Image (cartoon, rainbow, N blue to C red):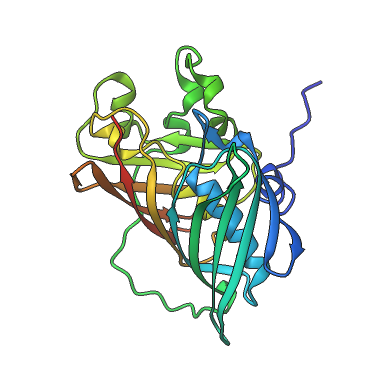
Length: 284
């Protein structure tokens, strides 16, 4: 008999939800445990970190949906225990603003701030339906004609150092994978279908991960190596429809060892559901 199909994970009951969970210790203070499952070469993914702080702010503020989240990455986070401290800056009728910082202890027992966030939250379901835009969704092949890590001729030799890849459904546009074959285009573009590997649908919190989940555009510029995020701002524009989303990221300027990445996320109904810009440092 054929194996029974595995039902997709539900929002609120998936690995992503468990690994971004926070536990209230006292008003404004949350305990969390950063999972090693969202790392690449030992570095905790910046979008995953943003989702952890985003979940704490969703609990701390009167409104539950992130509208704009700006983060500065101050020091490298590592898997393990962490503390998130939140503060309500302003609680309005339609928007609430708060800040949050994530802390860990170093080898000498000193508390170190890893990331600091300022964010405004509201109710995405209360937004008007009026949309006037010149933005157009990216055009690239369907999922079955795109490529993920599993589509190579053999497992990557460093696959065990990229556990985040096992938790994502990431299928890259063939026109943006030349870097993997030693033939980067030099355009600074990356496009992909994005979802979670367990089939969980996208929601506002997972969009904070989506904008930082693709390979760096620096790879398409012919630059290999780690590209750590310095600052990342995400705008969530509406609640995504069920199904995988499309992510398009571009870089237009690399100068002084820094580059910007502008991202757009489009849902299955061709709606622009999130935008972001980050500043990253190129480390050769």
